Image (tube, rainbow, N blue to C red; front, top):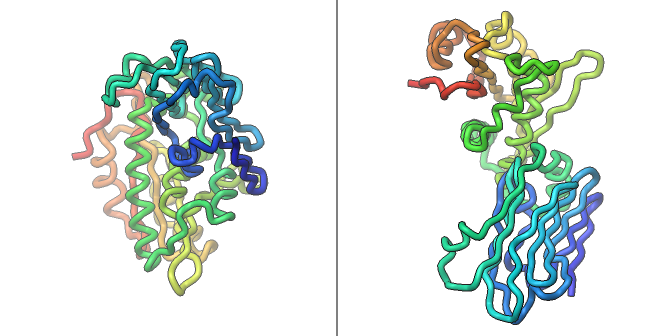
Length: 323
């Protein structure tokens, strides 16, 4: 009835009829939807549809008595109840701050499910970075190698832009505000970097690069980098140095800290992340947009080869113009 796979600390229990609907890589995404048709009274049975278990993280969907249930850690949601053996349309979905599910009589129109969905807001939750690493270690994620270190660099740059789009899409930028309980104060750079790394890791799971964001002993800082396999060349690394846009060390980070970090990692490429943080009560820095800050402050600086600077909009106001 069930397939159970154990990969180190990861356990996936999967109802056999769900095998064509669920991929283990789905659980590495910040948002996903599973849809299928339930036939011949399937939902009347007390079944686990899928259950992923990892230390500190669980995601489970099950059914019984004509209903579907989803649970992530301690939060639950259930669908409406439809008894009987008629064919039903089932949808189960999750993102970083909600879980939901729904069932409806089968019509063949997938869009008809929207009005049947029920969802509950949850604490901000992304799959643990260690989950991605465990799956990759067992070759369960896409394992193709890159042609060159330049390809790795270009891919990571693209994915960082996609991370920003996801953060704004879900309104997740609010999670980088509230230092010491003060709403108009952004968190410190290491905490923001861990937040960004959690989004970037989901893209890495699909594109075969690994993200590390580890504390530096005794410093309060983090080492933030990406590593990926390159054909006939071993591993390529991309060093990431991050600063708030209003940091007094903004220029120093680009010209001194990032090159030194690249040397320590033996990385050919480096990314300088600038966290754009503004709100009506936090009007810093003085520039009106990140693009102007880039032109006025960063462009005039000499930078080592293989370095790119990128701004990530984490403001609490409308996105600043990047034109």
